[in-house]
Image (cartoon, rainbow over all chains, first blue to last red; front, side, top):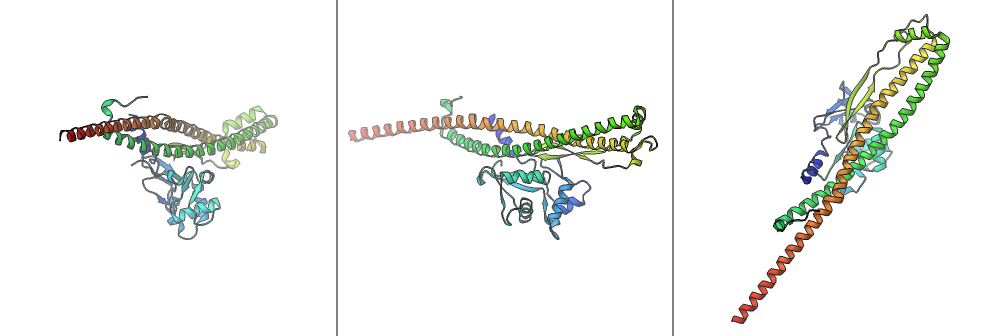
Length: 131
Length: 212
């Protein structure tokens, strides 16, 4: 019985991820910028965050940046470490956290800072569990 | 602690238990990561709540001081009349955002600054002090709405954090050690059976050699 509960818990870990990510440009054009999660709930983006992201991008990057920006948590990276998948996403996060370009691994204090600055446009994804 | 029964001490049970142990350890690692992430969210929100509460209290104190001054300058009847005439339009939008599977409210106050003409009260019986009181109470209300949303989110995150901690503790202190004991017992039992077989075969070989 207990085993079933834990399996269910692992499967539940990534239910908050969106079914489909949208680009920053798409989010800006929408009247109510939001995505639908795998569990069917609505996750709304804060317009102030979208505008802040626009300020960090150049040219057509607005159409290429996919939201929400994922923060990949994988126990294989070590406890408290996370990876930002995607070059453009990593570049934006690097600018926010004032990191060197090309660095995709961030650590707990940086995750906290990133989540404080972008609470709605970033989300965690857990790797290495579930099926 | 439940021990495996004699009937369940087979090689297939050992394989199943090893799978269960690996799943439990992986689950524990992931749930610990989730707990860390929830703790980050919790402290970020707690800081926000504390800041907003301080700002709201400060603004309310200022608004009450201005109201006292207004009552003194304009008189109680005129001030109460202005309060009744003030337009009660305060638009807020409540949407949701998902934090680690927890749906938390996101309160956005749509009501911005408004001019004296939009306030609704007469301009002949009031003065700048009335405008200041109205503006300060409006600002305090905006802060209180945001505070309510954040406090409610904080409570939800705290509940989820507690639930995840219980799961991690159950895995760490019950499931994993229990499974390890079961695996050890089955391994010992299977080793015992193997030794028995070995001795029996050795005995049979000796017997056969003696017979001829």
